[in-house]
Length: 296
Ligand SMILES: [Zn+2]
Image (cartoon, rainbow, N blue to C red):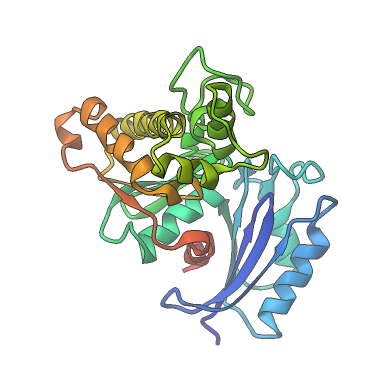
């Protein structure tokens, strides 16, 4: 009997897989870019290259959403060829006789950080990935919480500006429209920032660190938007911790200072006095560690 678990992290830009041991250590991993056509063949060959014939005790899947954990299907926004794709049963057919668990990638990031990263010791936390988009997931009473269909904790679509710009979700003024990396860069350009053509959130962060006013304001707006969403989620779910990762969060205090300042103003209820904000520790590995933990 083996105690290795296979973890799959399916995203819109990359697919990663790993063999994970019972302590949560990654034994072996690999990743490939997500093909624009049907990505199933890429998933299948990646999984077999990571497993290398080993016997696994189960498979944990983190997928970009929306997911449907009841039906076992995924409909990632950036993968148009997969609409309600039966990912759980497709993976099951490769590994008959072992449990195969599916969750959203935000839930898996939060669970990974809870088990092995910045969330250790917390009982009620939200994990956020502030990157091209803004995703997230909840760990409540120590357990991953996906809600009715597996999509709970999707904090990027909390509305923080009702008159704000249109969002990919069909709404307006979601956190993602202010704190998503490309949205921050676009806002700074409109505000008059003279940026190189290929400027991204990292270039924006460098300009802010150099003291440029508009990039600094872009991070301030993003941090306030993230802070407002955390304050709302914390009040609703009685949280003790928010862990923030993703490319935009690499800017460190440029983002975290306005987040904490906003929480001071907007997370005023007595039960939120101890609410902490920490930087994620596991980077891109959090999703794989969390996916493996779904099986344990
Ligand atoms: Zn939205």
